[in-house]
Image (cartoon, rainbow, N blue to C red; front, side, top):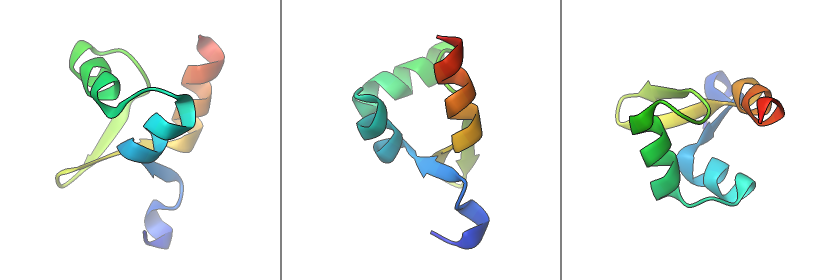
Length: 58
């Protein structure tokens, strides 16, 4: 990944880090739950600071 995207996690890495499967993250995206995703082309990325904020709010 480039330096521009260093503060972002791909869906697969986030799923592994929080112990959920990618399908759960996809469902959360669809239902408006979970950390806010960012789309770059066809890739779905998560800003690390947004994920931390979301985790702390749970």
